[in-house]
Amino acid sequence: MTKMKTHVLALTLGVLFGCTQVPYTNEQERPRLLSLDRNRVLELIEMPDPSLSLYRNEGTRGLVEKFFIRAAGSERVAKAILRYSDEMDLSLFLTFSVAYVESGYNPRAVNRNSGSIDRGLFQLNSRSFPHLKENDFYNVELNTKYGLEHLRQCLELGGNDIIALAMYNAGNTQVTSRGAPISTLEHISKYVEYRKKLESSFREFFRSVYRENKVASLGERNIQQ
Picture (cartoon, rainbow, N blue to C red):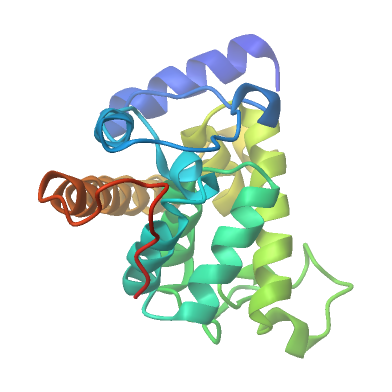
């Protein structure tokens, strides 16, 4: 995809979904945090996307895990997404929203298409992943690993979340040559709606903990579920 095509598609999708495009950044631009005090956490949660930074911090990791385990309704699912998101430097809001829209956090989800089948947590397509056996698609670890690897590739090609989601759903060739179909735009709309709710709930969760002094210092203890 040329830079001009990417820019035009980004503007078009951004207008359609009323969201600000955040350019993809690599891991060197997202330093790991060693310790944070209460005031710093309250500042951080007001930033565009504090999810991965708070997960990488030893003092707040437990709270992040607790929130996303509740969101996904499964410790196994949540921890797999958290781990691979961290390894691949992907926003937790992004990856959990994709998992929700693709499968409703259901590792056994199946969607039959014309000539192919989407399976598992991240709805891996049988044509795109021909080397996987049927049972592999339902393995939470494998599905998450391959799903997020593919999502990262889409981010690198598209440059931002919205284009990446279009590519993830419709395929790189479809999006770059013919644009995103209506069904994909509807799919992205669901993602945008869920992500907004997820971000809002995440921020409110951390505000309630730190403003009510449930945690005196991130370095003192880690709240577990």
